[in-house]
Image (cartoon, rainbow over all chains, first blue to last red; front, side, top):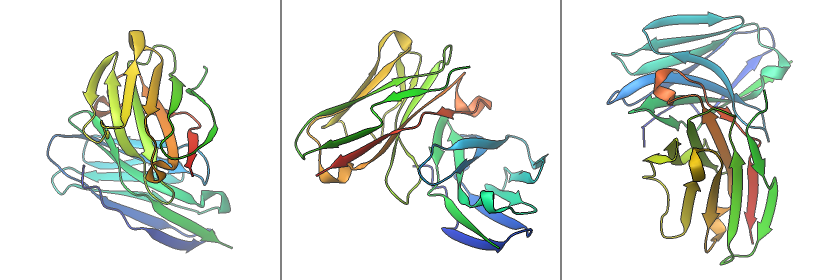
Length: 108
Length: 116
């Protein structure tokens, strides 16, 4: 496996900000993906980081530190529809492996 | 652009029976993945193809699972014989090239397998 670790669950209020952390194995690392998965549906792509730094895409931003084997996904201005599982996925030696996912629950 | 197609959507079988899943990736996508997702867990990579060659099958239980990708396009995943612990959603995904080169994987709707 790729030893991808992320928290199991997070809860936040509508309009708030939530940060989902992810650590991964650095050996053979190519890049880091974030996917969103609503219950009963297939994962959909959110972001890809290969260089250190922050990538912003609307309400969602993703950060990568290659030297630390660390990434986070930042969700701003949370909406009820953001309630989903967020999957951190690492590409090592060109194989794509997922973490267990973080279930985010947005409350009114 | 048509997405990744999978069939069947649902399958219920008895333990020790055989089952096969089919996947048609997005046209032109060289990389094809099969994942197993057990309820409440993240997708687990079973096998990854690059065209019709296997990139990784280290987590494929080869005593009962097999997969092939004929002519580098469609793929089938077979389980023979099935066990209760094989109950899961089987997701097929494809990407233009390898994931490590920044190409996102597009997922099909999955096949939900229940082994009773």
